[in-house]
Length: 260
Image (cartoon, rainbow, N blue to C red):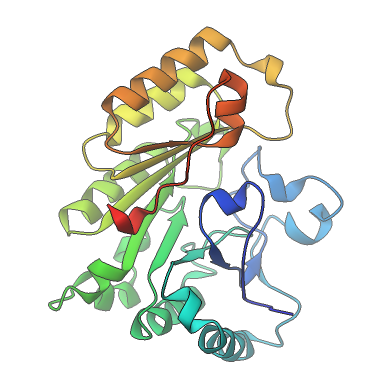
């Protein structure tokens, strides 16, 4: 049984074929976090990130990751590896180990997707190797994504949405592929506003409604207007199943950020 690298299913499977989870819990403390709900909330929804209990320490986690990377390497090289669904891979308490594993994956020829709500990680000392890359190898193998809801008050421990948008713009100017997770849509107007902030520097938008809440919270006209704006002005847009089901639209095939 894998401990670090696995094939996500369900809503997570709409993001990537392969993912890596090294930590559980997160200091972003988002009000809508799916890890805080259900029978696993006590293990997954802690207010601070901690190493998964299956690892003795970070060195053990690195060794397990390396072993699983090598075991699944042929399949991983056909797709990409997503960091991460059970925490935030770029917050101060998790970034070092995640970067170590990302560097190992890229060295093996595996593409990596990084999704975060931290705008300041681009200044981390260990990221310099990745950002200042004369060969262009990292720009070919790493895509950076930011979760953008436009609702700072619902994400009290995370960077402000506008700061995340600024970091996305910087990364795009450096030549990296960028993507935005416009999920969950909390208020369609807030999602539309933050969408406009990054429309010119984001390669791919993934849009989904909030899970675990009654869909009656949404105003259909507002959701339709938001969706129309994003589809009209976004470069590449993937509407997640939660949204296509709500609007009665045909399900879409996920878009691979590395095909863009």
